[in-house]
Image 1 (cartoon, rainbow, N blue to C red):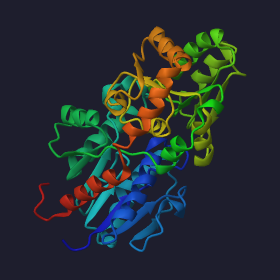
Image 2: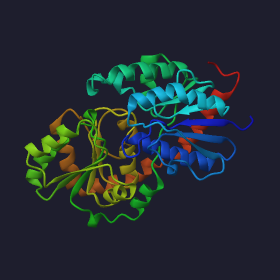
Image 3: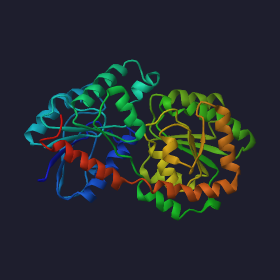
Image 4: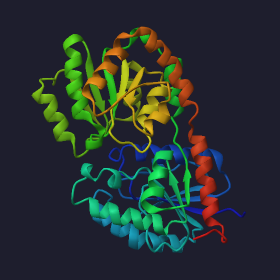
Amino acid sequence: MAALRIGVNALYLIPGEVGGTEIYLRSLLRALAAADHENHYLVFTNRETGPDLVPAAANFERIPHPVPARIRPFRILWEQAALPVSALRRRLDVLFNPGFTAPMAAPCPMVTVFHDLQHLRHPEFFRWFDLPFWRFLLRVSAWRSRVLIAISESTRRDLERFYHSPKVAVAPLGADPEFFELAERAAPESAAPYLLCVSTLHPHKNLPRLVRVFARLRERRPELRLVLAGCKGFHTGEVEDTIRILGLEAAVTVTGWIPREQLLALYRSALAFVFPSLFEGFGIPLLEALAAGLPTACSDIEPLRSLAGDAALRFDPADSGAMYEALERLCSDEPLRRRLRAAGPERAREFSWERTAAVTLECLRQAARPTGPR
């Protein structure tokens, strides 16, 4: 096949504000640049996103658009009206949409990534005025795209269940090499007495319950602290209220978004990692914790169950008692901690951005074939 002109719709990206979908796009673009020197990538960016998103490779080109992504209705209108014109002018063979939504009038075949279908599985976690847009735009994106990519088997099943789509490929995500390096240089005896949770502060992340369980745990272990690292979502107020009501202001730190270097430092020094989500599309922070060799406890839900395997303790995220028992054991059972420190990186090596890029590139080639099904 001749070299393709591949558009990348990065108009959704707001650096430091969209959580795992930013990590996904940045890591995937780096992996594509390392693996593919033949096809030409045109990355459409918004006003907030700088040139650092685009790899410094000869076959990658940044196409800046003057749209402010923080004004979501404006961004959506721009994506629907201006992006197709830009795609037509640049003679794209295929348009890659890595952030759920796609232009309805695209002049070329499209591949769209669905990180989850939370708005259909758990609409109670959404603000009422957001739901109609999620329902309409994602359904249209699925219908208009020639190939869909799910980031986990769990999301693939949801796409087949809700959209009855037979055109779904699964491209699991990876962990960056820096996390494996943390495991290689780990000094468990120097770990600081804090539990780390990396998560956007959204309702499905189950953070108020985690704070309440931590309050119980701290009664027996007063030296413990809890660090909640991640973007401040629309559930931040309830999380911070819970911390204040329980008098934990000095024991719980809510960092908000922090640079990657500071995040790596938190993984490096933590005593253990906890991931208590009620719902996930994949769970990049969990995979990063495993790669870093952190003793880890996570929710016993899919896809986290399949992601972690036996390399993490699992608990029912709706059961505060089960969460407490898991965290108490994680902090006190040294043979268990040694086993998890060894098992985590081994498990995480089964996932890689190279594999994600390979599956994605094959989907792009498949969608661009003239004989491909529409």
